Length: 597
Ligand code: GTP
Image (cartoon, rainbow, N blue to C red; front, top):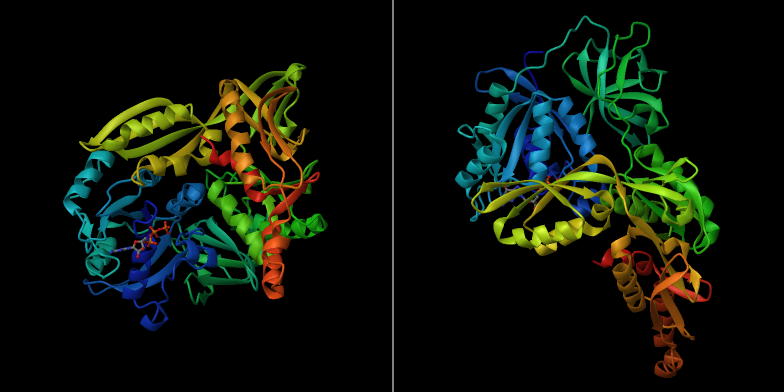
């Protein structure tokens, strides 16, 4: 056990975690240089395309240190985006140390701080790593000062590296061996292992990546997954490796490894759960297990109404390898049969929608995302609402409660004014404001989650030219003065377009929304009225005027191939349209609420 080092890499998005992980793997010779593809650690297609890490990945490395001994280094990569912070905390709970990677040309960001808090809660040894020192804009000394001021972490022994060119990597490996403590645990005690990641493999089924704290897991052992109460036989065990995991007969105290139990459902091996021996179980599971809860909900509807069952099947399959999504069938007068799907955040929503479309060949319309509201009714009942159209009529509502988050924002001082304006526009309430350095400020705000869900992050990036960073965690429910805003197309309420808004902003939002819709709704053969209403009261109206003549026929009358091409193009364009009564609405119209202030 004394030659094992378990560590994570934590960093703000894009500060170079995955690149550093790749470089460590390469330096330890775990992958031949020629097999080192662009980025080994980000394996999913969507991850490669977007350059982000979604699933935490781990790898077991061997390193011969200067003291002549060989060490096992278990490297645990963690996801950097706020939506996946739950996975970060489980990864950190499995480590004794963490490399705190900060971009030498950027400095500490909100996500860095959030991760450091989680690391400190887990008593981890932190090694500050200043990355990207090869960049001309690198200012390692300023960044060290930044870390000392914000986090209070001594940076005298910070390691300066370039994950890209390899500078400082040897020094970093030595620091890992010297500074990060070896794991502790009782090899003789009953098996106690934390599932800190799980995923679905099409050949092996649902896999659990575990850290063994006490005892060991052996091939053939009958184990109990404590949260589910289910018993399974261990069919196989492997040490994690991004390209070729290596089989083993046992995962011992202090080690990490992959457990194969032939499971069909990822829900059987949820992140945070404890695996123990079925006959001789440990007394208490590892604490802190909470199922990942979705915060953001949206309707997903197949454009082709006949494909509802296909969508159900696709969701069933996706759920097997993404336990965080929830879904329930729902009906919309406008969109027909679909599902209300719960996500961890907006990025997760985008990824899920993209996977459904790409991997299952579906074409979907997504409605505007919303949070869970709690409504106390006049009859004393309390209900939870994840779809604005479910809001009871005003006379039946006593109080509406909406979820809030505690947001941390770091911005250069030159944009402070912009950020404060944006936060007050979004109904934020200031808790704290600290100058980290002369030119950077850290803000803490309570802010309604619904405002964050809409497009806060994009707006924040816009008003700070991309320089501000942002992180949040849920902080409970508060009473809100809220109303339902409906949109009517040709006089009919389109339920899928309803949103819940603060009463004092309803008028403004209604006006902006119909204006935006007017831009997005293509002209039809007849005039289309677009109205915003609260209850029966119309508060805004725009008109999409009728098309004058048949443009297609005239322009392309002669050339048959061009005409065919145009028709094909139109067909492709139409895929994203949904008929609401006689009116064709494009996908963008359903998300137009995201585009208004
Ligand atoms: P997520 O996985 O999305 O959280 O990001 P990450 O922190 O893993 O960042 P990633 O490794 O994807 O690196 C982000 C960008 O920085 C990429 O374009 C890298 O090529 C670049 N990068 C990483 N390390 C270095 C470095 O040492 N020097 C330079 N010049 N660029 C680097």
